[in-house]
Length: 577
Image (cartoon, rainbow, N blue to C red; front, side, top):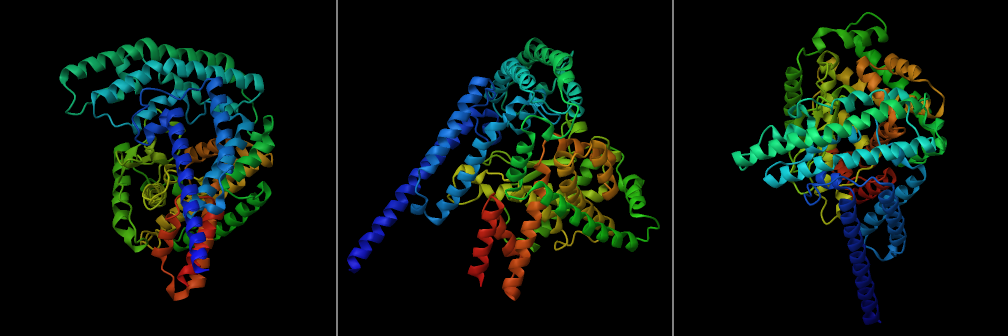
């Protein structure tokens, strides 16, 4: 009898290994397909094989990718989950969520809006920020991409035309920002082109003869191919496309828009919360945070209303640097101040380094205060925290600590770098990005500044509350504009009434929510869930609870849906007990 049981156990184990190996082979094949089909994504991961091309955005190629996604989902569903190890069940569940969502997304034909006010073919030069120009071949690959740019422009115009036919059009208030972005690519001197930036400097390994030849070829390609392509795009965009864009701002204004917003809310938050439920959560959080702000106003002795306190924080010269370079140095100093305090709230520090860089000038006026660019999966490029130096007089210093905690460490850099260090995980898991997990962690990380001793100054604490309020306001204005008929002006006014962020940032933020409906919902929903899990763990473990262990446990899953994270933390609590 014992022998029979042993043989059965051995057979089951062998089946598990076999099914697990087949699953990992499938993951590897799909990862390779993704790199091949999306060369820019491969470049960001540090894979150099496709650095000489752009993603094929022809309708035929898009249809082919969608068919392949549907086939991948069908293949995934044929695996027997019960035969997988616990680790592979997590991999399977995450892959299934991603693949099902990808196929559901096809119904909304997002590719018919290939240009946004925060990016598109008009900012294609930005890919160079992720490239390591170390060899002549690196420059040759970039030249090949430059020569192929007219095809990418033509494909973009074709998609814009299809969008017009289908009535799938973005809001005009956002698209009015795009012509200056295209015009920035139309230069008289090729050396002033954003595409030329990699040729301004060379590493020591590139000879003088090669440098001269590469620069001459770059100037020729810019003058003869890139500038004419962008002239063509600008002419079409201004004459034919912009006048046809919609005057409304709600995504529900476009065909199938209500269903699309419901899909986006579920996708970004990884929950089943409705727009009404999210709106209500936002209103409650706004009220709670306002009460905390009132306490700080009283602490600093400000005489006036909370709105007047906001105006003071937006305008008083003590809170601003006068020059872009001074602002950059201030950001770098804040990052150095944070680094040694990390051991107070983590046991595990990721190996990958990070740096602080300015956001490129050609996109700075139309983008957010800061963002993070993850490091390459192969370790060939560090992560970078990009900060906006445009109009430094509108960038208050009291926001620097929460912003840096969110975008750099221990926020997005820890989250992405720890993901890359997941042992034995397939590449899609090591690089996955669920917005509710990632941005929820970033907002949660802002609050870790208290345990790290970074919020000694009341104005820095006000900055933390301002940033938390910013994300609570998002729940209200995003659902307000896309599900409740709010105007852009009403959303801007609500934001200004409840947060001290500068007006330039507020307008850019509202426009971002218009342009990417639902994305802004993920931050507060994710943070609330992580904070709920922390409170649950502290209550259950009592004196056994250690914040460092909890924070490490949240990051050790990599990026996952919130319900998956909750199951993991519940199991972690049970094991600690």
